[in-house]
Picture 1 (cartoon, rainbow, N blue to C red):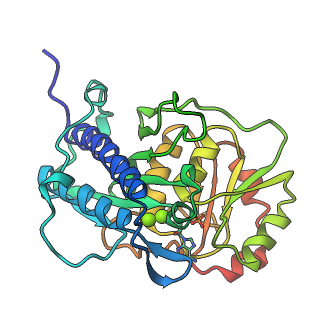
Picture 2: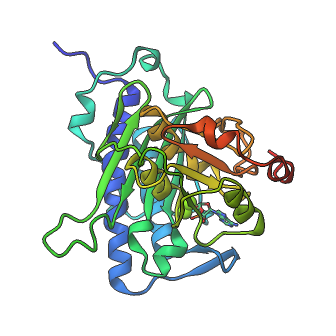
Length: 308
Ligand code: AMP
Ligand code: MG
Ligand code: MG
């Protein structure tokens, strides 16, 4: 008889279905035309009704199944009951069929920290750049991002009415990542993907110093990691504070599961234990391949400007 699925695989399988429900909420809110936009720290830091409903849906759904796990979501919401219609209790059977890596079979629920970005790329969502948007569920153990789910609710939205809308990418360290076709960026080309709505002189100076062949400016940390694993870009470079642990946890797990690397601009790993500072103050540097090429070319002046 097959062994019963481990806690980690059950969490990932549930996160998959929870992220699919989240994507339906993201699309439904947009379809109503009433986004309920609120400014958080300023005009480039927004929250919509979709951010709020999705956070409630994901956190309440996962907390109901895994009450002892620590769940940290981006949005600060007043405590209230979550409507039953927002709860998802399904899971992805395919994920439960995978073998859990031996180093994770003994994980206890209270040792997991789950980082939620209910809607990554909110600014772009409000501007109709819909395929920039992702839902991020990152799973950390021992301070390390070990598994993640990225849902892209509007994947294929420009491909016509017959195309299947939306997709879910998931990965676990030691198993791999699924839901997309792993592709390397063109050899010998330096294509940098960076922020679209949170640029600064430092962000631009850092990119110029890398002498890229081209620069892609798109929203969302999840979306930028997808650009790396699908070969559209060779490095994600963001020399600025602003990105938080919920932005990087799920993307990091998926990128690392396929052999990529993500750090801050100094080359320091991110830590995802529950006590950690949320802000990735020293920016982001990520690649699928050739990490050292980019890391070795980050100017010292840029590094000196970004304190971890
Ligand atoms: P971006 O590449 O600009 O889409 O940023 C990636 C993630 O980091 C998104 O969740 C942004 O909201 C967040 N972020 C980056 N810079 C800032 C900032 N200056 N203020 C608020 N959020 C930011
Ligand atoms: Mg985000
Ligand atoms: Mg967000």
